[in-house]
Image (cartoon, rainbow, N blue to C red):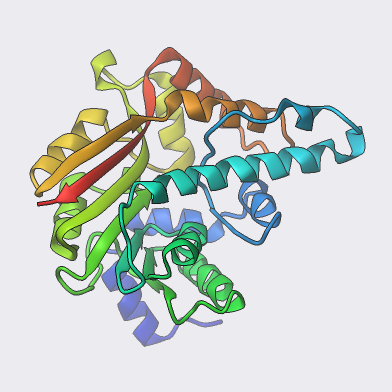
Length: 290
């Protein structure tokens, strides 16, 4: 389908730098089986979110011909558990509230939030392919009146000031400047509103980033931030952490199971090395807008 002049204007407004265009190109073209096959289990697509919790070792036992499907289903269970933990930290949310999923991917967490709270959710992504896919999922579930996805930049969403009870980012902050991002979130959140972040971050106690973390950066065309940068950027934008949870140990089993599956992408060893050597942390940070 040809791109119209109006779409080009919108695209230029959303994708403001060559780097953002390259990131959008990456995710527009991405069709990794590890993302799509897991979503096919129950038609809930989490896109590139990783899992937490111990996996059931019995999935590696039993008939060889069904082992792969058991592993796929177990990885999907772990990534859904990760999304549930994120939603657990949003605090009280009523059906009248509005939430923002910043970097919404294929929309799975937004759909889960609406199912849990009955609230309205807007998702934003710089990938047109992801936005179209996610809106189709919302329509199929008949929730598109409450769950909507937009081709917008999370650094400049265009939504009304103070309009959000809660905002989350799930493995998306490594694509943006944190000071700019949290300035926008501070503008969007109502007083007392909650921001929840799950992210991989380099451990700056160890000094320079490790070879394994650099490999992750290169694989995903991203720029992983040091742990301290999150807290500095939040403090500069009236976001006060109320909960910090180290999920590093909890995510390692997911990566160990994924490394045994047929949907590997070649980055599994780098994640496992970085987590186990302590150069990379998997953190949940919940912060209130003051």
